[in-house]
Image 1 (tube, helix red, strand yellow):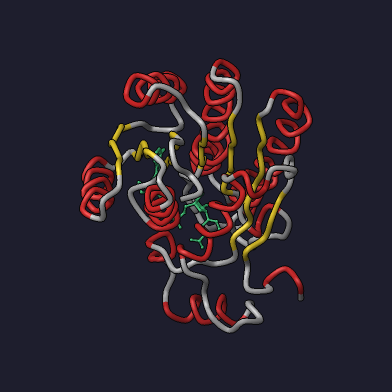
Image 2 (cartoon, rainbow, N blue to C red):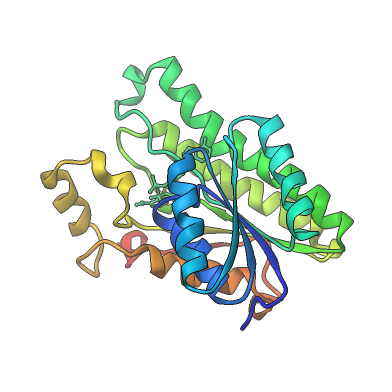
Length: 248
Ligand code: NAD
């Protein structure tokens, strides 16, 4: 198994893409800290992993709260002794409005979770990884880390920023045995898309040359590769898994 003896952390692991990543990490031998703001979903993710023979522990944390994120890393080390792999996945879509009508509160909420939350994660993960001699971070951005999402300027802004943050970490930690990459999924069939009506969903599907939405498991495979030693010369990068969305 390619993650044997590794300790991995996934935020937003109670649902969708984060859940698929946590399950795949565990299947590949990692001990997984499943973190989410939603306790019920986080706990049921741990039960699912354990029922499939994996090792996991739930730790509740709101990634937009720096004290809770610092405590999450402390708890990870108390539980499994170190931190080798971290996937900063928790994120929201946020309000849908043209930029001129975007509310100040709506803007701030998306920035707090999708950007500040990823920064808090990276900050405390990096400190711990330096202590234990190295590690790997994967940040979940989006295709909207490179192209627009009309009516979601806060989302587009945060995802572009996560790509920039990832490049900076790659540049700063290259000689400290810590790699950091970002992933850019196209539209993936998760509860995040529940807020869309059928017509909007169809229009989104049409934007993917492969003619369908992606699956969480298809994103998890790329994240696994970037989290493992198979990607040992890759850092500061941004990799798409988008069914061709950004190619046209
Ligand atoms: P999801 O809504 O299914 O799951 C997100 C999880 O994050 C939920 O369990 C939720 O409780 C948790 N969460 C939300 N706010 C949190 C907070 N402040 N602290 C801790 N946990 C929190 O969504 P998903 O589709 O799996 O999205 C996961 C990530 O993938 C997000 O960053 C999203 O932007 C990104 N993404 C999703 C898509 C897509 O089409 N679904 C496409 C590209 C990128």
